[in-house]
Image (tube, one colour):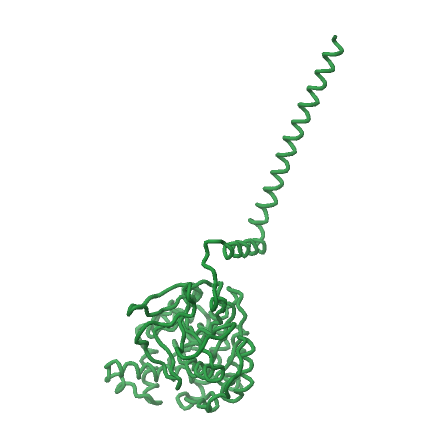
Amino acid sequence: MLRNVNKERRKAIRMLSSRHVRVLATIVLMTGLFAVIEIPRINSYDLRNRILRARQTLKSKSPDRRLQEGNETLKIAWFMSFPDAGVVYITRLIHTVSQTSTSSNDGTMMIDAQGHPYGIESNSIPVYENQNGPSLSSGSLPLPETYILTRTHSHGTCFDCPPWKYLGPAAELMHKRANNHAMSIVDGTTRNVEYSMDLVEKMVILVRDPMDNIAARFSNKVRREVNSGNTAYGTMYPKNKIGFAKYCDDMNGGTYGDKEKNWYTSKGFWEEAFHIPCRSEFVKLFSFYNNVRILGLTHELEMKTVSVKGFAVDVDNTIDDVFDFVNLTRVNPPPVNLLGSGERLFLSFYTHDERYFIALLAKKMLHPEVYDGFATYLDKYLF
């Protein structure tokens, strides 16, 4: 009998031990599973990015997300430029040659067949039917098939504003956040909407001779002031070399002169900027294009930089380059060139020394990859 009791006892011990092993194994397995999940999420930047992308993919397949239909498979290629870099002229050229429309984040304006912008009298024409997005720049041209070039001027292009509006971390952050917001007119009311970054895949960056760009911006500012009823502004700053010089002197000695000196000194380029007319305008322009590149890298966009000079002196190859990038097809030949050589239109507005310091400022401020886009305009002044 004692032997039977010992036998039953040993059997119970084995069963108990087996349960302990299974429990322990379960604990070990679960602990290892949590370790596999948690440690890479905390410590691996690359894996975290993959997880975020996976979440975005899952979100895109969620049944409660609005389905894309028809034109909603069309992707956006931002057409990025500093104001008065010539984007309206190039947009008209693209309309003419491709016979398809572009779009704009400024949905309160359109471009007519002659390339003139005009205010919308009725509703904006949205690119997408079932989700937020930009508005068409032409009401008479069809949509392209793959990518729609979308004009945007981003952030940091203000007139008469302090340096932190266009330099530093806050300006860079605003630059990143501004471009997937679009204005439109609906039933007489202007709306501002945010659209999904999932729609944006590419970016075409248009650059112009910086001296031409800033002089043209001055000229258009005078025109807008006069057209709005401020005729004294046109008298004070005539649209010529003398008016530009006075305007730049007033800007350099204006309200933010001391702040500009402090900021530009801290950034390491005050000595170059000091000698430049309208120095804050050139700092804005160069900072803008630095932020454009940061924006593209942040969102992993394919980027292509093209120049106004290219559209002027090498129009066929430049058009082919852009059209290949955004899958457009030539239908018509380009219109008659109105750009001249695409540079030095306002060369007389600047002295030789001023041109040298503008080129030096660009070299000092711009990331090397960004400066490459301006080299055709500025290298000649450095030697």
